[in-house]
Image 1 (cartoon, one colour):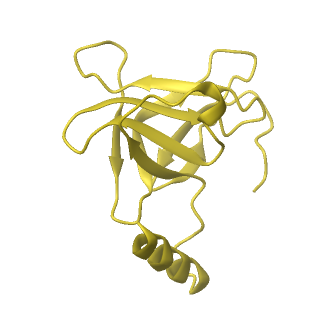
Image 2 (cartoon, one colour):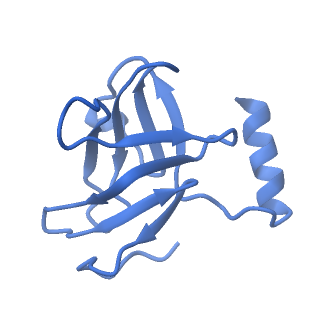
Image 3 (tube, one colour):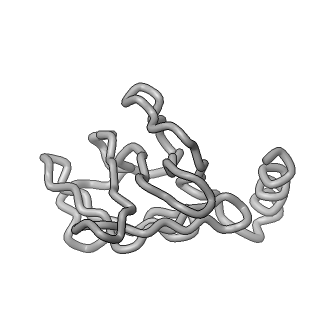
Length: 123
């Protein structure tokens, strides 16, 4: 993990890649709401079977988002993690709370959908 983080840092400094909004970590135990921190996607499960994706909304509300990765349930999402630890979440995530955020996460970067009802935060 240290080597991956070092390579990612070097690539960002050399401006080969942009600074990601999220990095991903596979964990065996579901994190508590207090353990879900901004800019980190916790994928609950293991390398073969993934159950949940847990992260903080990148919008102003910062609410904890829990996405089911169980393809037998509806709705469900899929998370892939590239070799630099950047997550991609498919399909998009839409917050139905007062936040009204709608976004994609691709290679660790948030891409806001045009129907997002709030002013999105600037990095």
